[in-house]
Length: 623
Image 1 (cartoon, rainbow, N blue to C red):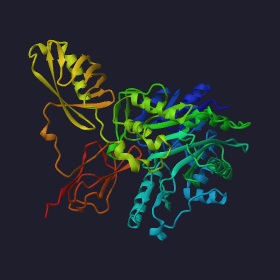
Image 2: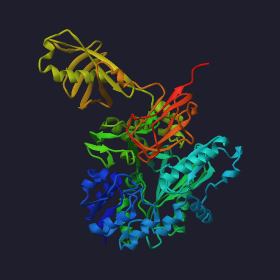
Image 3: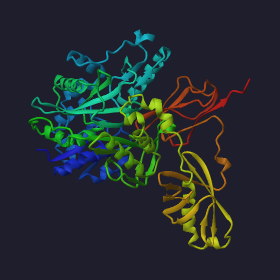
């Protein structure tokens, strides 16, 4: 029997595993980097062991340090979570060699699926349908579009869609460089890209006695940069017979590699066609939707299988529908740029919320941008979608910019509600889903709430009719509002101020009474779901940057610079010049105009803060 579990991971998944361990009276051990010294998973574990350093390479990817931490803390088992070393066969062997229980599949099974090219060979031999890889040197116009994929790893790293034959060579090189940086293996391959396919997967659990259970299906088609955003179970609107074929292929895949534990077999579905993509030999981020529909605890099942228990009888029957949305600290309207800073408040009441953060925690640059997973369950798909969209819309999220509005709009989009979505959903609809929809009265409410606090000291009596001005910035631009202090109270043109307190403003607008909840954190003001930054009354001319300046859109590390790029280089508008790595993703910085590079301040490996000047491109004078 397992008595103490070290989770070789951080954040949300570590907290998730700890929750089940506590319910089973199993002691918990966390490992933490210097950047995670005060992280939630570090705080809630019974014991925590420091891994010196801040970056994943220095800490969570150091298998020998994690095994040593487990032995030092007296743990008798290791749970890998997902990401990091969760699909590393050598790490699994090291855990077993140290006399510890590995809460995962056999190292040989991990190894068999670690290379996507080797996995496809095994699945083809087992009769599992798949897309055959293409020889990169033999790709023709007739083969397009194609997908370049990293042979190792996952999470969308090292993946490129190629629609023009002239782009294939450069995209192969870029994908290989990203894969090498992310996984230490730059091997890539090419396969046909299926337009408008759906990403459907099967959750399997297998014991060490030969039993394999398939837990329904999940649809994970809504993805950004090949990373999932919204997932649901069961997968809706599958063609007749497709679910049975998916279950049969998934269980065949598991049996082929003598699998044990929880895992996921992923497929691309297009009409009646089913194609094997890959097998994730670990727990998936989206496992809660399966737990909700089947009424199981997949982490508890992982622990049970690791202890040698049998899966007796048949798997439970599914009931109802569940939808999960990943809440990211990122700005979808700005090329999904990750955001950092203090998370002042995070509350999504009424539904399941799996998170690695609490109020006041800091979102840093070293790790994934996911704040939480919001999960809603209901008897029907329509009810589950409505519950999740409503909960997110009413959520209180104070801190860095998030994708909350995108999630709400996605869940309510007709293509999603009618189950006609595919993996190109955001390619087709991102502009509409991120279109500005500012609340025109939020800045006024912020100003009136601030004015209330100052009016208690009698300031309005000196100049009772003097108009006051406040300036704010939001994601939609800058705003200037005007109001007055009078002996009757606060007034503003065009609205009736019914009440104004520091935390609540009530306005009557065109005969409709509206409430505005107001919270302030330093120079940031949150009015309902609108985030505002207080601006000085007069802008500072010194804050202006020269035209053509390339500024870091987020804090991160300079991953690489375009080949041959130096001061004096001629560049074309849109040319990729610099790549930044932040929160496990690469972000391309392009030339803002056609001209000459007159300054280059970025160097590979350099740590930069948001707004740092990376380079300057001087525009070509008009002819």
